[in-house]
Image 1 (cartoon, rainbow, N blue to C red):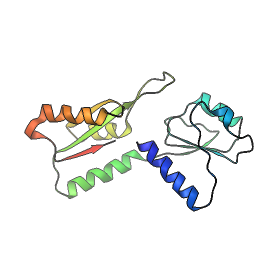
Image 2: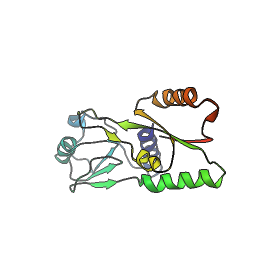
Image 3: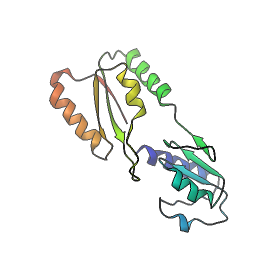
Length: 161
């Protein structure tokens, strides 16, 4: 959902600025025109994919990927800063029992899973942490688990991915 939000915002901005935006998914490299001005990759990518894309154009921007290299530009989210702002807001509005629902990032190329960046930050400060591998239903399942275990001791605010 997060990557989709980024993609939708990019599409709206491109339309507002009269920029032609072509969309492709992983594996459609042969369909990308050779005269393209640049490529924006949203979400996770790997060296092998970037190598294929560099054959099409050297102008590559990677947005919010765990993998970046010196051969492309990258736009990365400062999750620690954003998470600190969220926690500050929760505390300023009176919440003392704060929870976190997150996940473990897995990859299609069998790379080792990566702990969600905000979880690392939350583990320093919170006691109510629920995580699992990211799936569409993960948040729902984690919340059901928290309700079942904590019952009337649920946190008053919960940060989610």
